[in-house]
Length: 94
Image (tube, rainbow, N blue to C red; front, side, top):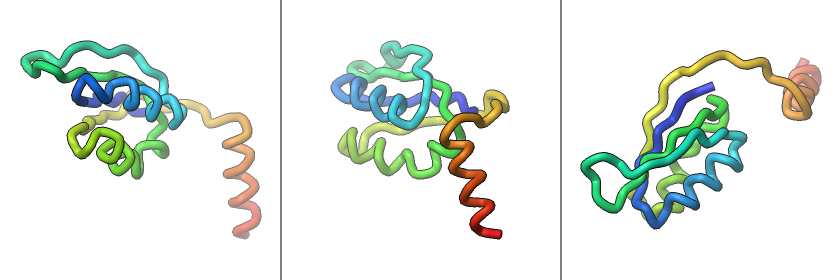
C-alpha cells in the first residue's frame, strides 16, 4: 500500500477523490495546500498496482495541472475477487 499526496487545483478536488476511490484507494483527508492559494492536497492510501498509469488519468481530469507524490506505507494481504482473478490468470499461464 502506498501513501499518496495529490496536489490539485481546488476545482478538481472532487474529481481527484473519485479517481482515488475508483482505484480502491482510501481517502485519508484533504486540506488547502500551504502557500498555494486555490490548491488542495489530498492524502490517501492506495494499492501500488493502482498507481501504475494513474498519472495519465490524473493529468487528464485536471487539465494537466495535478500531480502526486508517493511513498511505501505498508504491506497488506491481497484478498477477495481480485486475488482470485490473479490466481486464475497465473494458473492459465502455466
